[in-house]
Image (tube, rainbow, N blue to C red; front, side, top):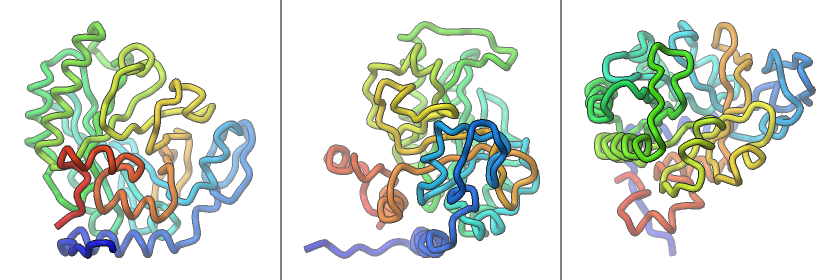
Length: 280
């Protein structure tokens, strides 16, 4: 017999809102066939190889300073079930829209999580402290995200070796988990995964970028929980284009994720470590 549990008010309210959101008809794009680079509702430049993502039930977006004045209530009403938002980068940068996005998403009842963009020109300890200073430890939030990519488009051109990168990553993940009480999510792209993460074990949930193929085709069958399937998405409530993402599972799986902060498929393995506990 399942043991009853009671959620704190903020988390309980979030789950109620999630249930309501999941009952809303999905975005038009999710029910529309895709096609190679022929605009469809929901995506200005879709790729046919990721069409499956459009019909999956739990859809989300990620935003940063490029998406201004996001109307999260409108996005949620149209079928967007979650948002990840940029919070910090390196040791001294805060996304200028983070604080307003954080509050507005909460006010709209949309599950939201914060991400840190890792850079390779400052110490992991400095970046971890910066994240702790700027991101609230909110029990109603999604797990925090560590964004792992090479810094090809920044002034930082340092490219550490694999051992050094892994040491920095594990320190960062540890601090983020202790700060929020939730196992962080790892976001990555194909190049960084190939160079650093492939073959390495992490207990963390993975969020994989793959806009021209399904993730298993690009990431050596790395299990994934979130999939970023386009960067040219069109979503009500968001001006211009936005990254679109999908959660791997059913609506029930999503509610379990909201309750525990863990991929339901991993709970049995992670629970003995003290993680994935239902909110109390």
